[in-house]
Image (cartoon, one colour):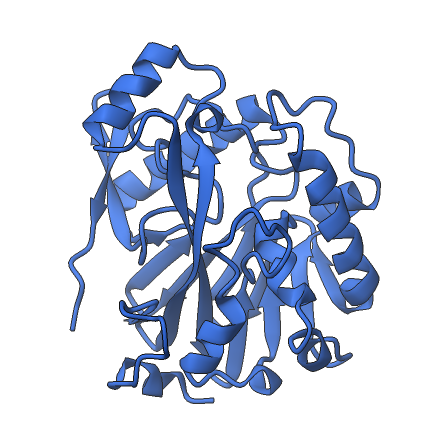
Amino acid sequence: MQLGHISQPYSLVRDEPVPSRYALRVGDIEVLVVSDGLLSLKTPDLATNADPNKVARWLDDMFLPPDEMVWPLNVIVVRSGDRTILIDSGLGQEQPKFARAGRWAQRLEAAGIDLASVTDVVLTHMHFDHVGGLLVDGVKEQLQRPDLPIHAAAAEAKFWTSPNFSGSGSMPTWFPDAARSAAARFLAGYGSQLRLFDAEYEVAPGVLVRRTGGHTIGHSVVRLASGDNRLTFLGDAVLPAGFDHPDWYNAFEHDPEDAARVRSRLLQELAETREPLMACHLPFPSLGRVAVAGNAFRFVPSFWEY
């Protein structure tokens, strides 16, 4: 696979009237962000510790509906030297209720990415919308192979061997069982391929995965560096409201207090360095920067380059 081909004109696949991938370079590192689709979620899950009136005002200011909103689901592919790295894998077929997501495999194929050429997989964490794509028929047959390492934080893998959600705040009732099921099947199918790290690990030249904790105990971010260029993939460390209200707890955080601390620290770092970021649940292609706005932050989307 040559990631350099992805920025060339291509034929839209049927039922794909808008772009679902975006290519850029970080120095010598090639990056492709791919939309896995959209997740429809109830707005109370956006901020479980906030005054509902404040949440309603934020939604209105953002021109979003008051009861349900869609969260994008973005994954990325990185090429560094001769390494082709998948970072997260989207929803797969884990939750039929999210009928607008689970497009990862078909969109990789549409981009000309051959799964047989993949050299590494990195998981920011093991929620079903990040490992689900690996569980799909047709994908498993190509990625369940001894020569393909899957990099994840050791703390994350340990948690999912015996998951306990007792301190996880206000999760939707359906979520823990769905998360347990997907993680169990992932570990059963791919456990022998896991390459675990404690704090950080350089997967390939300029591709560093670093554990942050917070959203899950082993949640990690991926920092890309080549020459003077940088980009951080934040995983689920920041969700749509996380810039304006970094202290809001979303319903899917295992340790909401720690998640808020991690979120604020990462956003402060990126505001100071002015380095670009991407994240799983920001509007596609999720590329932008962080600016300080009083006691909070604001997201500054990057202009698309054609």
